Image (cartoon, rainbow over all chains, first blue to last red; front, side, top):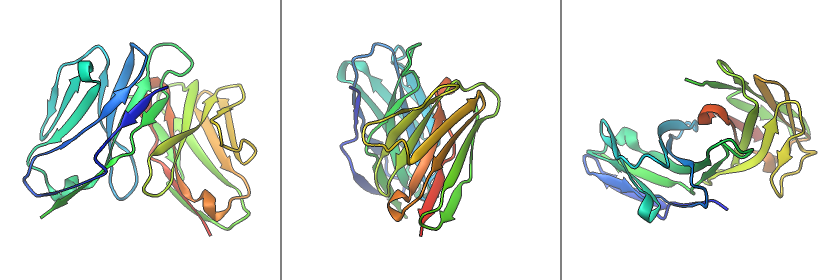
Length: 118
Length: 111
């Protein structure tokens, strides 16, 4: 069975601080995808990134960066110079890949509520 | 990229009535779609897997007679919450297996 653990339930920072959201996953699959989503108070899921299991390159997109370490089954997300608009719930998710019937099925972590104070 | 359109975004209904939620794949054919439910301040949990032309597969604990899923075409999957009750109030969201794309979600409030 797949499992995603986001140990940090809530994080509160002051604007301009850097913050890292942790994500640890468990899977027996060799091919899978990892995701981060942002869910603002309005409720919709905003896609942030998808990373496949064969690509361990770290990625940076503006103030966002992701560190994927297969050896520790972690896919951490860092926001640099946080802003009030970053306040939201962030979900890490794991999806089966390949051509089996479960491909695309996602397992979500419990989410981390980030509050950025001005 | 793959886009999934979900409607309505919000719905309020009276207890005992039924509500239908639609998910359409706009620029691709979605053979398989997944339906998730999110209770307030909780994570998203998979409810069922919808396959075009066949019966949906429900996760343990999900009442298939209450949550009717129809996937009659390659571009449309619907979730009908029958005889809705306040405890069914939740955020429902679909995703397409292709492209790992999510709809924008439907917030259902049963009063």
